[in-house]
Image (tube, rainbow, N blue to C red; front, side, top):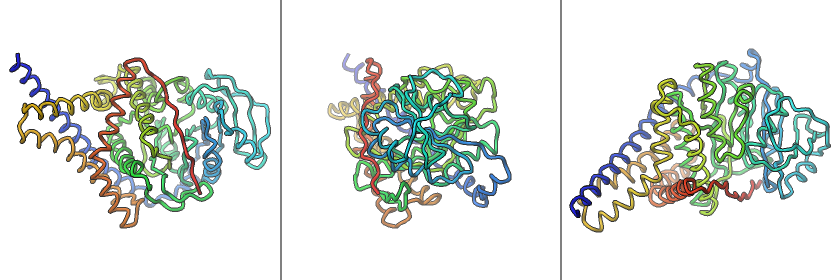
Length: 468
């Protein structure tokens, strides 16, 4: 019996080794594919003046929807930034989702808002709208006050009130760069089959911000936030951009995403009371709209940038990562029809199975793998050579991947331009693999357990807001 148990443990360790080798190799391959794709994209964009392009081609009208719940710390700065955007025609719809703080009062006072009658253009079911305000000094700013119903419900209220061609969802604690609307809307002008586009999210902690505009890009002071800078570079620049090559975007960040309004109406808007509504809507659009139009395209472009506030405490980071993990599980289980479904091409045959194995089940596999490995090491059930190989696969692969992400970022967008930034990013890229990655794995593991044990809570996210 002891020999059988030993064999089982050894085979499981071999499986974990193959798992780490597989996920590391996949991400490194995606990084190289993404780098060459980014270079090609930047070369194509280099000679385009989007302002001139929009003079020649009909632009799409835009409504920015900002769902806001207890956002008094940063709502004024965020709206100021949105009012400075460069675009021919856009409106801002701030939806106060029954905030318990001073969010609504700050908006009404700062922007001189007066109540006005309204008539929705569509009827996606939502919680009750209490009142709608227009602003005397800003004709393109609308403030909506509604009964609390969650982020998805607030977005749906904005969709109902909007009559624009495109809907852009922006988190209330985020700042988007002035030319981002020009960039993120261009794919819709260029290709009528585009139904959704995501941009890049970067960490604003540490940056200098003046009147809602990022004037100087700096690294955060908090080490926890610094680790997230490299993590976001890896995820957006070289993760999502890699899946873009396979027409396999399964998530575009809820902090900054753009949709054809008509297509949102077809799928009846965002799913209410859904953890991870940003991923769920994308997977649902793939599943439903690609049946109607096989050419329907969900895209990611790297240069429209949204700056967001990253957690600087382990408590808030843990809540965030558990929520993200629960959202991933919800989205994949709700749309399991895509799993190994050849009708959806590479998305069904490669991308969706990848997310199931490495994103949904990954935290359980990795956590159990670490546990079994250390028990095996203590009881002498694995050799030192095997231990070194597994360590290389689990840790050193991660170091290589993080370093590649920083190098490719420097060779493409170079947002962190000073030499001191680059040196610090290299140090962060190495040390995030010794503690931070394991910490986020633990949060994802807890999120997975909580979900399957019936805890589907969202979790309260405290925010400090941006300081000028």
